[in-house]
Amino acid sequence: MIEKLRNSYRDMVVYKDLKTSNFLSGLSVPSFMRDWLLKKFADEEGNFQDKELLEFIKKNLPRKEDWKAIKNRVVIEYEQVKFLAKILIDIDTEKQQVSFSLPDFGLSKNKTIIELHVWDKCKHDLLKGETWGVVELGYIPPIEEDKTKGKIKLISFKPFCPYSIDIEYFKEARQDFTINEWLDVLLGAVDYNANGYQNEEEKLTMLSRLLPFVEKNLNMVELAPKGTGKSYLFGNVSRFGWLVSGGKISRAKMFYDLNTRAEGLVTIYDFVTLDEIQTIKFTDKEEMESALKGYMQKGSVTIGNYEVIADCGIMLCGNIKKEIMDEDGYMNMFTELPPIFHESAFIERFHGFIKGWDIPRMNDDLKISGWALNSEYFCMILHDLREDISYRATVDKLIEVPKGADTRNTEAIKKLTTAYLKLLFPHVKQPLDITEREFKVYCLNRAKKMRETILLQLRLLDKEYQEIHIPKLKIRKELTKSESQI
Image (cartoon, rainbow, N blue to C red; front, side):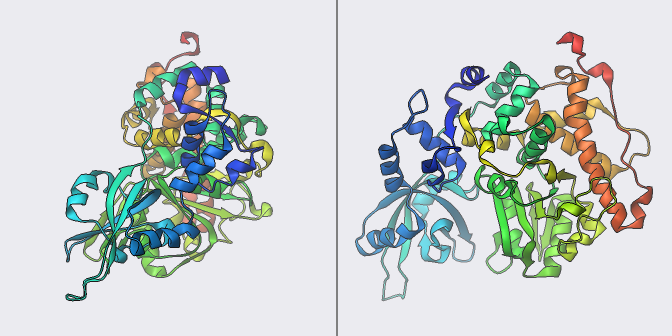
């Protein structure tokens, strides 16, 4: 299968060795950046020179503790300094000025400026939200006469986008693999070793975490034991997601800041994950609860007079005790979570539930050690697949909805089914491109089960849901490919 992977995806395959190499784990860079570095310095067999790689990192990827030295070079010595970093812009409507921040170094927007002639050159790259790229910094000294403060200025910006993405090629190449092989390819793309899993169910449950990566406004909840790798996947693999791990979060940070008039996380990222939800505090509890409910219902929320519209999914992750892990609806699995998550109106807005206890605890055997898809390339593909509406059209054609079916449950199942179709069968362009069995086993049935767990929990929270059932959705068999046609 490895040779097939290397032949099918060529330059987008990289040798990852996270099981035995302490050097890689010490890079302290996200997966997408790490894979690019390995590809840049590795030979055809995946071997690389530690010294060359370290020199490049030291020069181009400074650590947080290097920031004072960089600031000295820029502010005191008037040097122009280039390096790779995350950058986020802000537009001040009152002063008609553009500023930026470097989150990893604590450089805030009130100490920076992007002059208009520079902004004209790089605005198309920076308007997309928080972006990785090569920043070049300089300095504008203070002017005592008009009490103008000194500011660090952006001289130039080059986005970190080292790969040309041909999404149609990615889709076509998927046809070279069986579904079992493809599951292994997907796991390797997000740094996991397929051979470390005991069965297909473990693999599929793990890959369910990727559904918000490919489908807009998909809200999911995962409750699991500790140590199953939630934080790593949601916080390190894709630059299109944001992880909130414990601590405090406000409505301003999440949606819209009335004081600064800045849009929040949901307008920047494909998904926001609230991890360790037991320890997260909402600074403005009632406002945050109201905003979350409204946004998760319709993808928009009004803050003051400003309407926030976004396609970001909300992922909720929490750790629960083994004795209350129950998919059959006899135990309330939300009892240890904050009070907001005890409300049926809120829980109903999550489309599906991931049974995290079906994912093995992280161990060395689950770490990738071999050839795999480049994480940055793969996550850019998933990001682009969010825009493709043809998969939902295929799902709508294949699924027959009975009369009187509950609308919210039907929509949740269809969204989950669509996400599975994009992830597992990206080559499907029309109903006849997939067999009835594959669509049923790997997409529809899994989506129904994920939604059913939500509904079973709702019945424990609210008697009104006792008479609501999962719709008996059927597949229009005449539209699918039979096994004999393969």
